[in-house]
Amino acid sequence: MPTPRRSPVLPFVLDAVLVVVFAGIGRSTHDGDVFGPFGSQLAITAWPFLAALAIGWLVTRAWRDPLAVVRAGLPLWAITVALGMVLRVVSGQGVAVAFVIVAAITLALLLIGWRGIARLVARSRRR
Image 1 (cartoon, rainbow, N blue to C red):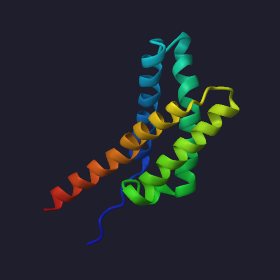
Image 2 (tube, rainbow, N blue to C red; image 1 turned 30 degrees about the vertical axis):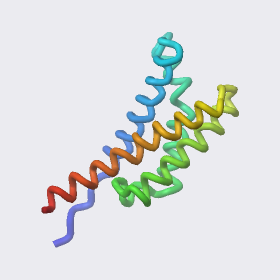
Image 3 (cartoon, rainbow, N blue to C red; image 1 turned 90 degrees about the vertical axis):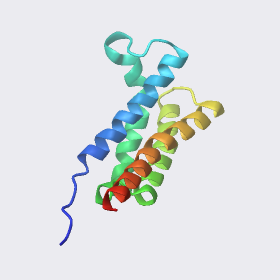
Image 4 (cartoon, rainbow, N blue to C red; image 1 turned 60 degrees about the vertical axis):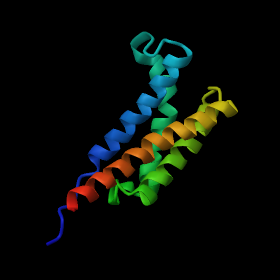
């Protein structure tokens, strides 16, 4: 019997929430002012990565298998980091080498990591 197709909405929302968490941690670490007036500081930091994530979902067609580590997680991570940095530069935000490294590592742990955990949990449930 075929398994029912799962909605990609929850994985997309989880990715977006994790990107906002990444931006929030960065803001709080460096400024201490995460929200600023009406959340503007968090929005300014997060939007390039959220836009890159959304484009990554479209480019990779991640909705086909949103839990896939290699087909979804890795390319989403790469696009989110690379395009997010480009969008930061275009919008006049800073892009230091150390920030690129920290962002790449953190977003890898978040965007790829939850998919790896989900796959392990799914496997253990099947046994």
